[in-house]
Length: 182
Image 1 (cartoon, helix red, strand yellow):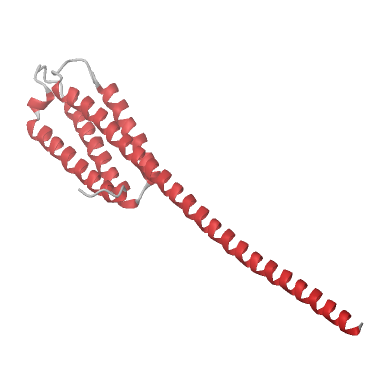
Image 2: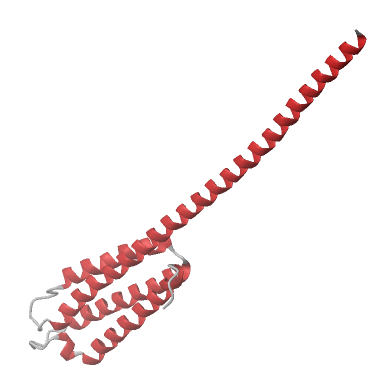
């Protein structure tokens, strides 16, 4: 009878040991699977955040360039207006468009990075300078019906050159940030 009890005890212990070993292996396996799933979820979350950040940046940059285009159109209209005795005709539209560039610049500042914000600041400064020059020279009351562009041709040509140079610098700063080569 002692032998039967010993065999039963050994069988019971080996069954319990096998169950414990199976549970331990299962727990390790489950832990490894959960760790892998967590790593995949973190990676997907990071990729989604990066994609969203890139989308927000792209929208900010495109919005800034669009605001610049609106300002350039208003500045061009003012350059082509004939001189008049009324003060400041057309300046409200130019000022409004310039403010739009300033607001779009704020988004670029938020989205960054610093080199893109610096390039945008340079574009904004050139638009503001061009607008200030138009105001200064537009206030001249010489009774002439000659457009500002013709009265101050050198200034107009310099403003157009600044627009082009600064805009290209902005786009060149943006491309690497958006992962696009020239």
